[in-house]
Image (cartoon, rainbow over all chains, first blue to last red; front, side, top):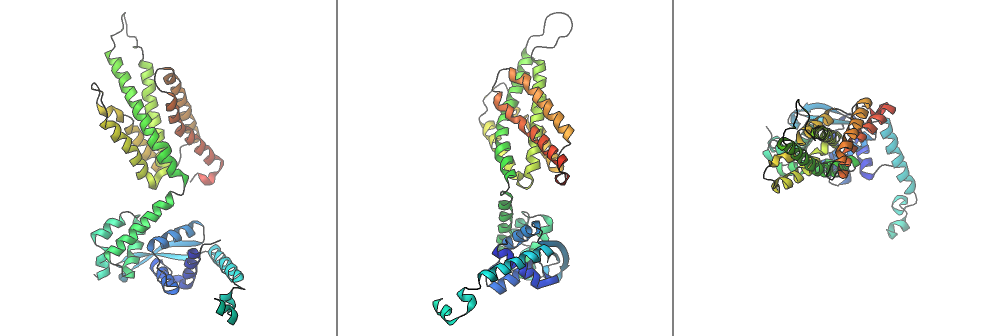
Length: 111
Length: 240
């Protein structure tokens, strides 16, 4: 089972497609969740997911807006897609009867 | 050159990036430039990454074994053994020449040769295993080896001997560390010969005076090499 941040990273990577690399993933996570994402957390999690075989990384091209420095490109492996889907299904299943998921007036007033 | 690129080139950031590996340095600096981080924030982010990386390495048992099970105790034992070898050599030099015609080996020469070989073998195998299992945490193992050296050199009080005799073990140990960093493991046959030879050399040393029992502990890195080579032979996936 993935951790929460691992799932966020896999999902951001999937959303970015061929443009998934360190800074872009960080920006995607920060803008979507509103939470700060440190370079340390990002890169150590990328390493861990790569070791688990859920991600593949390689050095990409350098661009002028990066001061001519190369990007570390990231792509999901089939195992990564499977793990993220499993996590999503589990969260969806367990949330089925939760008040914030059902959106009933009673549930909303209770929350 | 943009302001962010200048921040990434500041001495503080450049110093912090030394903590990272070259390929990662490129990617991280590029990301920090792109995200518009200032020099101070960039340095803090890089240090935080380096700390996380080091902390991650210590989740494995290898660095703990190398630092606290090998480097620190073995340095103490090897310094004691280096001193013992130097004193044996000094006694041998001071002994009167044997009477009679022809050259006869002075008493204790064979034991001294055994001990010198044993010192070199213990130091090399210890260094090899430390280098092999520490790798990126080698600096901690080196620091834990350095501390007892400084402590003992400071308190050395034998007038007739140089205090540096305590460090006789250091050249073969450093040589072993370099080999351990470069070679994944030695061949099983070589590991078995080394371990058996070291164990055989320990027997005459044990029969002489001195606290030899703790020194038996110095032979375990040789048997560790045998075990790892044996495992690699059984499971070729580990041989990489």
